[in-house]
Length: 132
Image 1 (cartoon, rainbow, N blue to C red):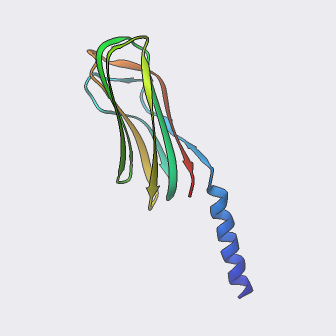
Image 2: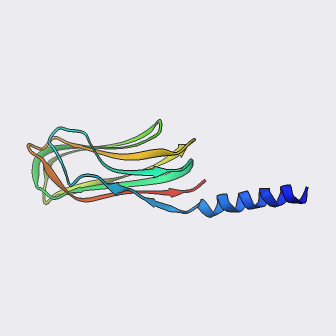
Image 3: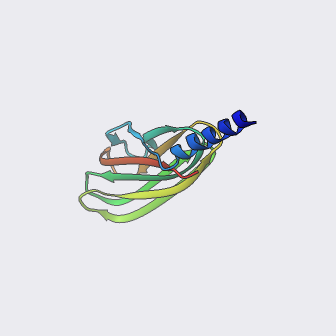
């Protein structure tokens, strides 16, 4: 019985050690083509519950721009849409969501824009913090 309790306590300690751990995504591309949904960052996460924060920033000024960002995690999706008459000096958006993963999954940050040409990215950040 003592051994079983020790194993349970060790398991709880390992699990609590993972809470608060920050996982950073990998930037996959330097630019997004016009009118093309593109995965710009990705991070693999073990099962658990996470707060995911994603940021995308552009380096180019544009007129009449619609941007769409989504974070896909397993069967969950969080979405941000922004329409601006002018995107001066670039600009960007951040998106946060809570996702629960039942098994190891990849979390992806997608970006889309309606600018006339390919737009370089100045910042791509995808981070997940385990909360449970």
